[in-house]
Length: 202
Figure 1 (cartoon, rainbow, N blue to C red):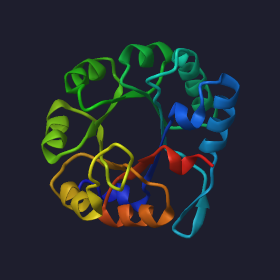
Figure 2 (cartoon, rainbow, N blue to C red):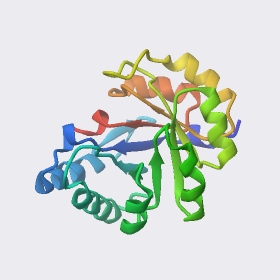
Figure 3 (tube, rainbow, N blue to C red):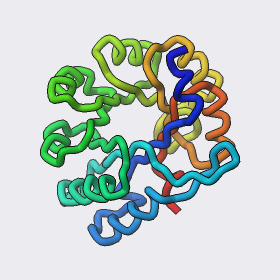
Figure 4 (spheres, rainbow, N blue to C red):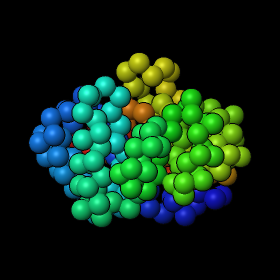
């Protein structure tokens, strides 16, 4: 029942991807600024607040420049939790709030926590979630919930709900989330929030 508080207002977690944001600094800044302010429907009311945002770029040669711009824009938009994907050193250099670790980085949780970073880690099973809890992660993503290219069979909201009921750490639903209908299903499962790349880009 630790996720009850989060059900009252689901966290909205934006993740960037060069496929949608580009690696052109000017265009990147424009798209990000618009995405952080995209209106969404929650409880019948419009809300434009992205609670969390993560810079994720594994291919661009200028990703450090883009990450710096990302952190600056997020801070200017009063984003509460600003994360860098997988790179603790870059996170510390740019003074972001925390890091979103991959499912291959469980051994990095301790290092991140020692540096007072907020730690979120990608999980794909109850076993991984339990491991994240034990190692002191603040939060996890659980995926894929819906159909996502090259991410395997979707787990669905029924499995998401069962997983949440067996966990003692806030769980963010991730994977194929592009519509309000899906978000309502995720909220009904008791998830602490949802994460998406495509949902926020229009």
